[in-house]
Image 1: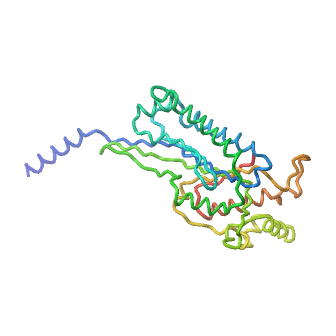
Image 2: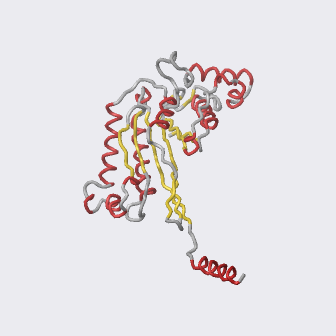
Image 3: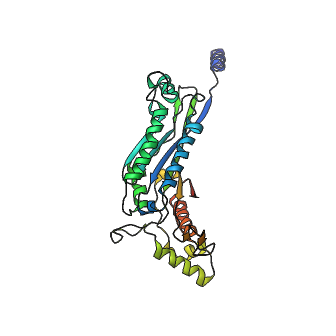
Length: 289
């Protein structure tokens, strides 16, 4: 009995001497820019490049923060619906000292650090918009393929030394530059994600004839909704659609062909939003600019 009590006392003493475990959670940004390089670019091509420049400035000044932040793991990429054009991934540099030299553009990275990579990124964006024109493509199928088969989404993970644990979280943002119309060639091969003028007109006619709004029309007519697609990665993705051209808007007169509540932009937003919600995305945002 004495031995048991002695052993218990020793274990209690040893346990009390162990350092208290600590947990820390760090969050980084992963920004994925995908541009629809279709005929919509005939309208306002400079708006895309200007907006992408703002996103790059945000990445530098609010995410990486050269001269202020240490050990950042954020990333930003730009691709067309077909090809990856540019990528900056701070997390790929494992050595902390080397990482900070790259971020601050000092030492061996004085001429090849973040400053230079951002300039190259911006140049590639402008060059791509100047030289690329693709026909209408099945944008949602392309998006699904990129998420499933390309390494564009970052997973959360953790680091531990057996006592302390640091959780590494990533906010994945996919920003698609498109007018929102889901029109593409070879519709006869696969029409599940096709949504263009005929579908918009059908929804508008239903709303007018029945005196209901867009959401109610979509709820009552499942055939006019995009079929949801379930993918576990979606729950970690914030999906943004950046709309740049509205066909039913006269830019010169600043007037719309349709009343508020029945405009192309509003119908497309509702269709995309419902698809993102039913497919399980973390969040959805429709951004008109």
